[in-house]
Image 1 (cartoon, rainbow, N blue to C red):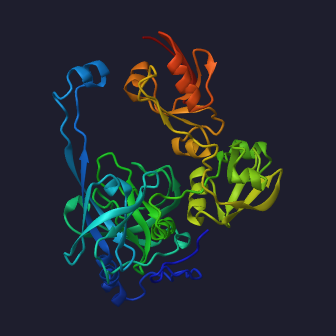
Image 2 (image 1 turned 90 degrees about the vertical axis):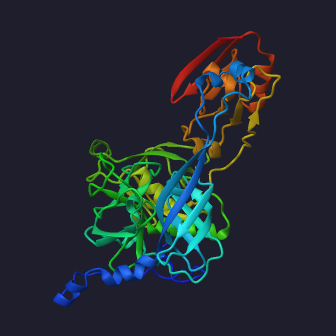
Image 3 (image 1 turned 90 degrees about the horizontal axis):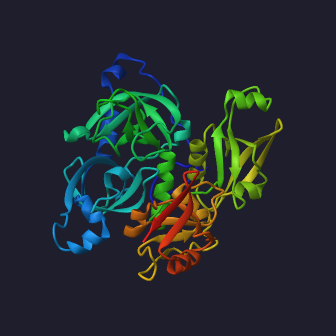
Length: 460
């Protein structure tokens, strides 16, 4: 995995340096508080104002193709403008800024304001909804203050931490606390479903995308969400680790417009005490492989169903989200060293870090008017499509990407895996197009939906 610290630009990789942290040892140090740290870090934290244009609501009657055509031009929904408020962190002096995807990902207009009241327009150059990270580039920016990225693998529970952001739009605010936990996975709300640093430093709406820093003023995470029933801070906040931010910045500088995610091609589950006991293990550790795609790089390296992955690049993994995080930080194109536990024996294997293969070709197809379900969009299943839609690794055949207006009325949904149409098996988009072109007035579509067999029957 990447064990680098952002030192200067262009990006320079060096051996990891662990910051020295300690508690105040004198009355003078206690009197200073966090003022020197905040003075150093605060200018690199910005306020972000995003404008999002969404389609207006329309009457459900317009979902019916007949009424939509009949009333064409009447009662058309008007677009609505939503304003989003959040924070961001400057990562380079030439204007790369990180924030949350849920703040800026869908924005049509983004305005960034620095602490010295300079304003910049910005564009999202790389974003990922699942990771909830977006990298922005400020227009005509130069000589900006920025924060150094600390190796977040060296962050420890109990360290002092400061959260800097713009909660509730009141202006830049600093709150203090400690690092409450590490390797939190699946605990955050919103779009982020990854691996997080937990802190009790108060985080409120508007803090999203702001900085979580250590006592040296280095960035250890990007504040992304909280657990709260009231909407305010209850002392349980989550931040995306700086190491993942560093990989996003690297890919943005390379010109990527979407995040290249290494593909494991496995389904796994955390080790439980019962599973550990059945395997004869003293301690429950690692991720148990429950399914493995034939094209998986782990399969190519020698892993099999039932193996336990205990480490990735020397770092312990105890959940699928943690394993995915470790692979993401390592980046595409290299190899990761993964430790396998099989029948009580440990072995470290090299696993290629690749994107999910788009083979065989997906052949994404939208059906035309000659079929009974015009507007239906389907694709052949392959590893890339399976990964994008989160489908089971064993899924085969053709998947629905968009049911279209007529397909939606028939009961089709995105993610449905088509098996047969009127009893004829369909293995490609061309098979679907032919079957729906030749279908009579009675149609039966057999499919798989969220692991359940479904049969749709309708009459034209």
